[in-house]
Structures are given as C-alpha cells and as structure tokens.
Length: 434
Image 1 (cartoon, rainbow, N blue to C red):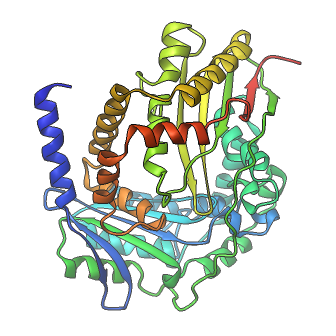
Image 2: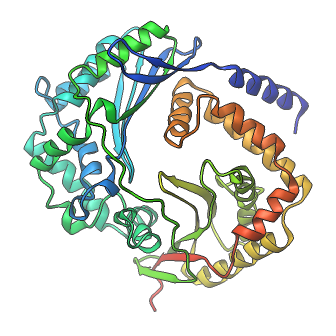
Image 3: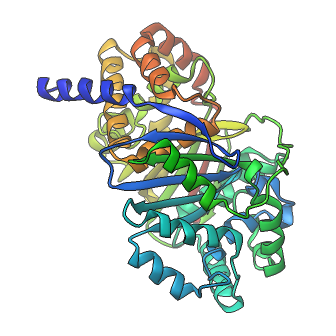
C-alpha cells in the first residue's frame, strides 16, 4: 500500500477513534446517542422503532411494516403527498422510512439552516400520516408487483421472500419482510393505522443524531420530532434466538432468460461473539463486498470466467446471523460455478489463509471503514447499527482493536470450524429448465 495512503489511513482512523459519542437524555426524558461533527453541513438522525418489523407481526400481516414504510409519506393531515414532497425539496431535506424483519426506521437529513423547519415535517409524518386511499393503493400495488416479478428482480425476490422460508422455517423470520404476495394485497388502511398506534412509541425507539449541533440543540431536536408521539408502552421482544438451517440443498426457480442468479448460505458469527472479527476476516478473503482480490472473484471470474460478479457478506438480524453470498453467471455455467465455489470453500477450510492475506484483510477492513465513516450521515448509520446490535458508544475503538489483534491461528481455526463446502444451501434462479 502507498506510504502516503497508509499515513492518511492512520491519521483518519485516529481521528475517528477520537470522535466522541455520548448518550444524552433530552428535556422530555428521551435517551439518544449523539455524535458531534463540526465539519458537517447536514444534520442527520435515525429513529429505529424496535420490535416493529415483519417477524413481530402475525404471519398474514408480515408485510405490514414495509407497506407502512411506503404508505406513511402519502400525505399528512396538513399536507398532501405532493405538498409534503415540495416542502421537503424546498428545505433540501430528506425524510425516508424503511423496514426489515426486526425494526422500522425513519431516516432524516437536512442542512443546519433549515433543519428546525424540516423537523416539523418529520414530526407530522410520524404523528399524523393521512394514508390517502388512492395514493396508498398505488404504493401497495408497486410493492405487490415487485413481489411477483421474479424474472425482473431475481436476487431481491430470492433474498426477501424465498431464502427466509428455507433457512428459518418455524421461526417468525421465515416470513421475510413481505410475507406472501396473497396476504400483502389484503392489507388495509385500518391495518396501517393500527400499526402506527401500536408500534410508533417513544419507549420503543432507539435514536442516533450526528452533525454540527450542540448537545442542547440535539436534545431539542429529538423532543421536537417526537412531540406528541406516545410513550410508556415499550413492546416486548418475543422472538427467540435461532440458528439458520443450512443444508446441502439446491433450490431451483425458473425465470426466463440466459443468465442465472445464485444465492448461497454459510454459517456466521453474531455481532457480540468473540470470534466475530476472525469470521469477518474469513469473509473478506472470500470476497466480502465484491473485493477483487477475494477468492470468489479472482478464481471464478478472473481465472475461469465462470461468473460476471460475486460476493459474500454477513447478514445480521437481532436473533440470528448468517453469511449470504451470490453469483451471477450464465445458465450453461451454473453447475461448474457451484462446484468451483465449493472447492474454494474447501481449500479455505483445510488450508486457511496466509499472513499476507491477513494483512490485506486488515488493511481493506480499515479502508472500508474510512469510506463508511467519511460523512456525518454514514457515522450516524454506523453507530445506529452498532447500538441495535448491543455494542456501546466505544464500538469503533473496540472494532479497530479487534482487527489489529486477531491472529492468523484464530482465523484459520475458525475457518475449519465454521466453513463446510458440503453444507451450503443454494437458491438458483435461472432460465435453465429441469
């Protein structure tokens, strides 16, 4: 690595590790994490309403959180959808919502010059969405079309709908984030209103703020956005920890076309596991994030020309973690690509990685972290995920220390324990008929 880049890397990492993250309590008693960033021109905020995701709904209403996330901006009691969108645009503010199996998230960003007025809009989207019937129906139809379009979105549909039902089975995580298409189209505006009433509660939230605000200004912003949001009804988490079911099965689904999308699953370590860093090193060497020096791309694409793209990464749910990989290839190369992938996994399991690869993985992980944390918004996102995963305000320092201290023997020992080329669940979406 270039010496100048190494110097800049060390300098930036030292700066980030010195970044102070505090837990603050607002005037109205709301606790949140605060990251001061004097260089930022934007104020960023994420609110996660916990235990409000798909897995916390009845099976026939599993898609309600993601439906809510698209319907909540179909106007408020004060503004129509177009008026709300126009006001956000005029203030250069961004307010969005998304859902997963565990939680519902609101994401807010606005310039410091306009953030207080934008915060009023954010508050209205939480406390008084109008759920205008025609607009809501359009949002519902768009999501339903996505669910039914395996050919157009093979990777997404396989990940969001097919995979969870295979590796989680009896767990509520098996619903995915949409549930079935048949049940999704039956969801109603009354369902949306009941969902808001039950899950959008202050005591049921986790909050992170970053930007060039004082602690007093940050606390005031929290209270303004959560003004009139109900409290004192924290929801219990009734989902048990679950180990994903990983078998040697290959599940095949037909979607017309010459190309194939392949998902595959391996074991992983949970966020608080002492082996977590060693596991991340293993997946980095395999090709986490599409690393070109990773074995998936270097072997399957560069050397053998079997795939267009491929990667692997860890998926963390509150009660489960697993490694999810993907390959994109031609229908005619599916079997060879899978066989070669298995040989790569086998080689890594038996022979481990080298000291040179360990150094590469460490440098790459630190470099990626620089990219992740180069803006105030990404800092906010980084700390929110660590907060939800049970880490403390010193999460960055702990992660960096683990990366520096993990040993080659720890990585290679875990590779033998965690990887299994004969126990990999595959989902193949292709134009290849049986």
